[in-house]
Image (cartoon, rainbow, N blue to C red; front, side, top):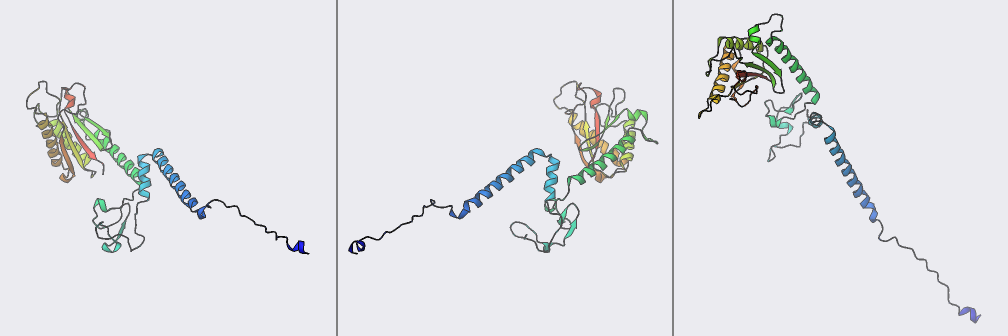
Amino acid sequence: MSAQGNVAPIIIKKKKSGGGDGHHGGAWKVAYADFVTAMMAFFMLMWLLNATTEKQRKGLADYFSPTIPLSRVSGGGNGAFSGDSMFTEEIKPQNGTGASDVNPADAQQAKGDSGVEQDKDREAADEQFRALEEQLKGRGGESMVSIEMAQHIITRVTDEGLVVELFDTEDSPLFKEGTAEPTLLFRDIVQMVSRVTGVVENNIAIGGHTRSNAVVVANNPVWELSHSRANATRIMLETGGTVSKRMHRVTGHADRKLTDTNPMSARNNRIEIILLRK
């Protein structure tokens, strides 16, 4: 009995193996997921910039541009950031221009146009330009263009608008040599152009071009001459019935934009009447 009473009790210890510092509650996973999402969005943006055209990118940007107010309470203000709340103006939703003042400045408008609408407007303008070309080239049923006039007229449609080019020939100039005094033929041509283009309301730009002089002079008159001829064309257009408010600009280009490889060719003497796109 005494031997058994001297035996020490057996103690069993169980150790739990630690897992280091743990995973800190998993917060790093949330941060990592946000990082991966941001990188994916970045690469998607880079891919879209590379895979789309300028017109498509503009359409995407306009898609996210506000067009109508959803609430009369706005986050804008009239403070340092020049924002306007919905209460500072009587809101009038305008198709394509967004919610803006009655007479808004361009910087205050929310551009809501889509690329599709602009393409339709361009196609309609091009069709109208082509109809004018037919008349200016004398292809209409009751044409006002004679054979002699048609020899001095070239038309083309560009990004700027419809360009009507009136030019000299070797045998038939449009202005008297070295002056801005038009010939009778040129007066008739400009009067005809005024009648044909009177059916539209596009603004007009006029450019004068001259050929180079055979002799280099100290005071080269080509600048003054080209501008004087362009301005004389403007006056004749207005006299022929074109509204003066449609005149957008009158420019003299001298001999800087030649159409013939020979700088002194009469073909370089020309007037360009441009019906600008709206």
